[in-house]
Length: 429
Ligand code: UDX
Image (cartoon, rainbow, N blue to C red):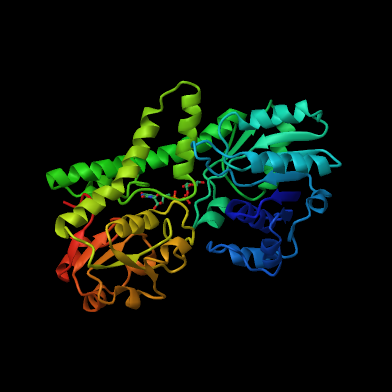
């Protein structure tokens, strides 16, 4: 199928690359000419495993432009994957989405299937549909389809090729369009869930909210574990083995970050309140997440009441492993908090960079050794494989102190203690 993807962010780019890989002809449009130029040369602006390879491999079927008119010429389907960033009040900024849809319709000279991939609050697809009708467009000119994505950064290519489900939200029953969506995803095997626009939008929000709730739940349990000398990793294993609960998203730590969970929870909470629903669980999930950092900081301060003269090594800057994304990163929040307490932080991440505003009070090092040298406390804030498999005996020799803060509960506590480290995790007995 000939497809145009609007937006070359991590969702748009992964979607364009994988769709071309499974046989579609894809033109990806982005307004940022510098990004387009570098994509044309095969250089991708983010770190995402396998994405570069798949972009290079499919040069024949995948191209990049900033010219929407040209990109639309042969496109049967237009996939919109632009950002919907949060506004200060917690709602989603939908201006890029509206602008993409309406500029696209101005250029369209034939019927277009408009597929909305951007994450949008319930009611958005219906509102876009109505605005198009109000502007005089009709069903001979467009069919609007909601098709939310569930890609995790760090495994976006894999997730796109192996989805658990493909959700399709429609204005009304339309077997021909479902057939087209199946054609688009030819070769990708997953159950189709067909629903209306709000159904599709809410499946996306409810999935993220549920996963975030699992994280906050296990973090709250971790706090309780501490009071009773229980180990939260045993609790996670014990409850996870119940198939009704499952093992995933039960890793306690400093809480969730990233460009999705915090924003999507806020946005869902916002729309619920607009409809006079008090979202008790969503609010509690956010509250636990917002206070989890302090829980860690208090634990550190129980051991070191004055942190100001200590050298702190922070391993991990990204919001999680296998990405260079620092949006809503808990590691960054941790560094800010430590700076408020008078500390200078020495940070290292295999891919992510400290934001400029943090380079005044802190230092980023190019490798583990330089970061750990003379550190009093080492904090592991992101579960990169490099940290899980590092030589902790060597780390001990490099450090001045012997305290390890495991902010992701991802290290071997017993091993570290056997090396003479003081281990601080959350809920570890
Ligand atoms: C998430 C959803 O998983 C994905 O389906 C959706 O499309 C976008 O949002 P992502 O933000 O890339 O993906 O990361 P994810 O792997 O879900 O992790 C989110 C945050 O939760 C990270 O900060 C991670 O460290 C944290 N997390 C995850 C935990 O603290 N504990 C866990 O057990 C799992």
